Length: 424
Image (tube, rainbow, N blue to C red; front, top):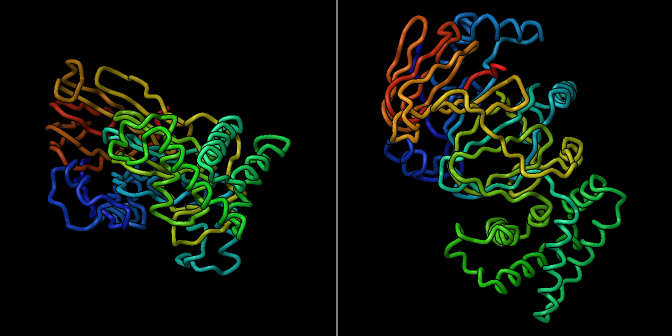
C-alpha cells in the first residue's frame, strides 16, 4: 500500500526560514522551519500515521516489525524517524544513549515519579537514538566526536602563541593545555576536561573569555577574521571560526571550550555522518536529510536553555578519540546509494534517475524492502511501483510504503530518498 503523508515543519528558533520550502518547492511559512518530521513519533507524527499503526499494526508495520516488538515486550512501533533538517544557527551540544542506557534510565525516572513531559527529564522513552545526516546543501557543518590530544594540543599551542605575539597572554588556555596533558590517557583527559568545563565557575569563565580572544587573534593573523567568505575558509582554521561563531550565538557558554575537543566537519553535498550512541555532536549550519531510531532521548551539554544533567551526560559519552564518523555509501545499483550504519533500526537509500540527477544514464531502480518505508522526492518526477500498487511522486511529495509491497521499482527522472529498516 502507498499512502501519501506530510507534516508541518517544526519552528525551532535555529531553523532556516527558506531552506526546507525551497528544497520541496513550497511557499515559506514566514517562520523558522527547522525540522520536517516524517514518521509516527508522538512528538510530531505525520497526519493519521500514528493512529493507523496503533489501530492496525500488522497492516501498517508488517509482521516482521510487529514480531520484533512483541519479542522485546513492547508495543509495535515504526523503528525509525525521517526528518528534513535545516539549521540556520547552531543546535545544542548533545549525545544519545545506548539501548541499555535508555532502558535503564527510562525505568529509573519512571520509578522516581518524574513526569514524562517534565523539563528536567532525561529519558522520554526506552529507546536508543543513533542517527545519521546526509548533506543536501553545498556544505553542512558539524562538530562530532572527540579528537586526539595531539590535535587539540596543537591548536591550544597556536592560541597561546598568538596571545603572546599580540602582547595579550592567555594563561587560562595554557593551564587548560596542561590539564589535558596531565591525565594518563586520552579518555581520562577528555572526561576530566568535559566534566570540569560543564561544572562551571570563575576559572571556566576566564578560560571561555581567553579562548575567544585567542581564536580571534589566530584568525586575524591569517586574514580570516571577517567571515565574509566562510565557505572558503582553510579547514585548519575551522575550529577557531567555531569558537567565535558559537560564542556570538551563546556568549560565555562553556561549550565554546568543549568545541576545541571535537572533530570539526564540513560535509559536501552527498556526504553523510553517522552518530552512534555516546557520540558528542552538534550541527552548526546546513540542510540535510536526517534519519534516526524513533526516540527523543537527548542528553545536552551546552548552547541551549534546556535542561543539562552533567553527570548523566558524562556517563553516556564515549570519550574515545576517533576520526570524523563519515558514513560511506554502498552503490547497490546504478543510481542507487545505500547508507547503512551498524544498527538494525534504519538505513537510507538515495535514488537518482536521469541525467539531471547525476545518475549516469540510470532510468530505473529496484529496491527490495522487508519493512515499511518512507519516500520523499526532492527533485523531478518519479513513480514507485510495488507488489500491489504504485504511486507518482513529484518534488516535495512524500509517501509511506507498507512492507507487503516488497520489490519496489522506481522509474522517471529525479532524486528520491527512501528510509526503511536495515535490510542487511
